[in-house]
Length: 350
Image (cartoon, rainbow, N blue to C red; front, side, top):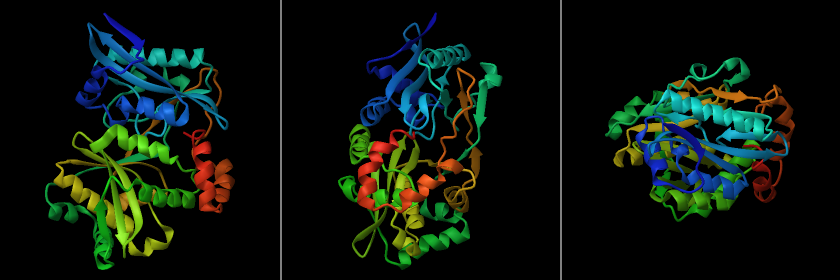
């Protein structure tokens, strides 16, 4: 008999199930529970379905209290992927029913299940989708990594290959060094400020590095001894996921990002990775186009939202026209001020 319950304490069976299941993503791993709870004061509600001691399904949820969007249940915040992972339809249905139950019980404005490109999970198979709203804001970009640099370079479209070679021409240098988190953070903070986005606290990245250890790597790109771009990437199974990255605005003429992602691909190939997961980007944005220009084909990544009270689902995207004034103001603020205010604000825009 299967039973659905909240799991409070770490159990090795959770991660064993996630890693073994084809649809289990890096963001379903248990470590995120304490990271997101500690960094942002979110309340974790981790659900699993057990049958005779065996895990049949998992769903990590977080209760988020936002000054801007009210209370919500998210699967899960600050993650490109999320939602239900299950081996049995009955288990998936139990998890979905329990999630909607909590949405009503906790009085949230909405419940969101984020998309997962590694599953064929179809919400319509488990519930009446007339009560749900499908959001098609994002696409994800996933490609294969070959063992040889020559093959990987040949797969990159000609224009982007030229941009990669610009890095060599300008004497850019790639350095993998997990001890240089402070330098990574400085570049990242400047980059997201220029995008009009609040930055995470430095302590959040410390938690990521400590929790994931060798599965979390920092790559810095130097020009004449100065770090001009950087990326923090995750390694999971045979995948590499460049996740938090950016470059200094004044260095963009050196094409540091193209050089950086190429060097990451080389490093991942040497490490035995087979998949380069470029992550999700909003359709129609510069990041979306950048990934397409690298030869990655976009794949739809819909998320599903449920409102227990039938309210309209708030538009939490930075692309929301109502938020554009805030984006413009943020871009014009001094960097030290954004680094101070950002961590206090970002928890309200998951």
